[in-house]
Length: 93
Image (cartoon, rainbow, N blue to C red; front, side, top):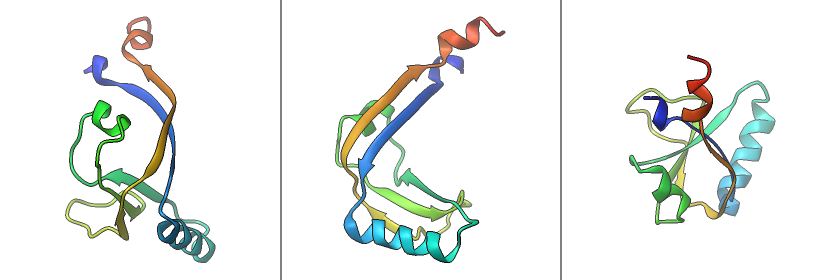
C-alpha cells in the first residue's frame, strides 16, 4: 500500500556494550553487514516517540526464528528525515 511507505532516517545511541560488540564484529568481518530492528511489531509513531521499545542486532537480515546477536534499548532517538513516499509515488504510477 503506497500510503504506508516512508523514507525514515534516524540517529540513536547504542548502549556502550552493544556498540563495542558491533565494532568488534565489523573489525573481524569487514565484508558483513549487521542490522538493527525492533524486537516486537510496533507502529512507526511508537518507535519515534521514544516508547519503551526493544531492539535486536543481527548478522545481515535474519531468517524468522533466528536468535539475535544482542537485544537492547536505544537512547536519544532523533529523526533526521521522515517523509511519506505516497505522494512521490503517485506521479510515477
